[in-house]
Length: 379
Picture 1 (spheres, helix red, strand yellow):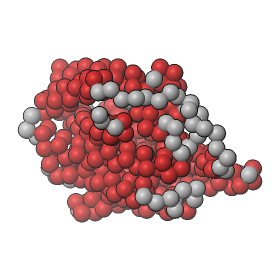
Picture 2 (cartoon, helix red, strand yellow):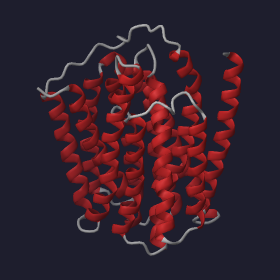
Picture 3 (cartoon, helix red, strand yellow):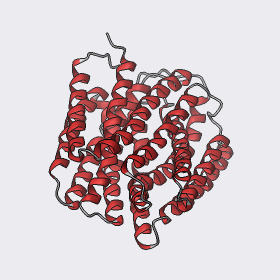
Picture 4 (tube, helix red, strand yellow):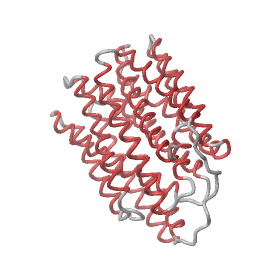
């Protein structure tokens, strides 16, 4: 019989791999249909808006309905939505699909994260989240590479392939019997770590927002910049795959160590490094410089994501509500990054989104310092 955690890790790898492939191909399909920089920005923003708003509801709902049931229903609907990309003929069709997809995929990650972290704290929680993070980051690592290779050969076939696989995953999750524990089973602990986690939660959420603001801009707009620089689709896939590679490395390191927990210094340092990578994207032309910048962004995303989900699930309550908010923050970053970045690229220049993103990271650091100072006064 398959262990519950092994099944969920496998599911996370496959579903994130499929969705990563589709996300990689959506801007390319939009460009093929004549999308502009602003179109790409709106395309990324509208899906992120509906995703962020839906996560706030679905996270709470999954605590009541059940994590497994929520995920299975979501997978079937996502499969149908991905199949719809086979028949789009205008950019406006993609905008509509993007909004609907954002609503539906909110039923995947908050309940999956809450399911994995349910009933765990401390090192047990860290190991479980480490396995989950490694699994989904492997999917994100493979996705852009496969997307770049396959889109150059058979563009529409990718959407059909991913739709079919996600449908099979839903069936597998239903057929394979796993024991899902009842929500709200975390025992009250005498440890002082719970209030300390609440203290660091807004700091981690702020860092994660600024990271995914810049990540949203990169995801939506970098393909067009790469095309302007003469970078092939295959190389573009490898470059974006570096983000997943750096994330994977970070998740492996953080899952095996606790030195970074409840400390702002390491979190601030990686954000400064990530801002430096954004400045490289704003000025570099060589593929090697662009690769270095994307590696730095992957390291940044690995750290802030881990901190955000760790402090979100370090709670005595049901995890769905907090993971919903965690994912809503990611969605809001993916909303404002493409939207404001696309506007800047269209009216200022193709490199301006990365300067804007660096500024957002620095602003986030100042806000985190304020949160830290205020929490010290309160505690």
